[in-house]
Image (cartoon, rainbow, N blue to C red; front, side, top):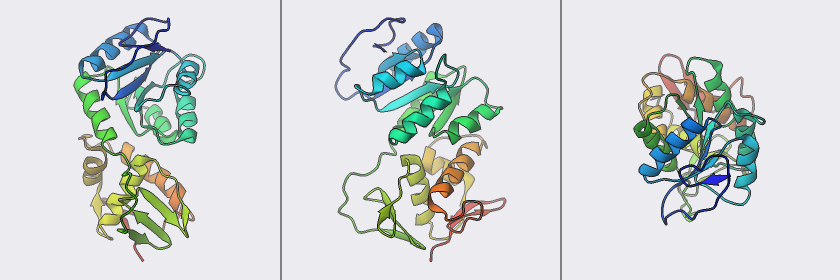
Length: 246
């Protein structure tokens, strides 16, 4: 794995400046990799790079990062497989990079566990906004609060950052958790798709609701007894989503 803005296909080790967000950029195209790494470095991020899925997974074992920026089209292990593997390891934030936004690539990447997506050609300012918005959704670390929302047999603890059913924790990604908290806090009122996109992702997606709808499907798989017939997170056709607290 390379480090610093970019150093070709060799390897080196650098220590990022204290306090900088650590980003792993996984991109096999050397021109895109170098340009994007330099742009992110200029924005204040500490960037490490990998040129393949294998290199990315191997490097993460000994060098943790705050976020992964992952190209889907990679040699060897492709980006979707890398994304699925990272999801089995925890809730590390993942933003996928796709060449076309009007194909199934976006849906496939989100279904694999990505939190967000960007399309090529990348705009550094937009990407920076996406990264910072995603990292603001960190789980709280203080578990002392007793505030909770009850959704049937599910209890949501916003300050603790946990969701439980009958005292057994349901493991959600930070994006899934934030989505559930926003819906639970509405206490049965309809929350529009636009409101959820703004509150959870903090960015204007110009009417593209695929990001939200895929995350709702993923959330339902984890909290609904029958995801095909949801009883907790309900769709309000033409409006948005709501929960059915009991």
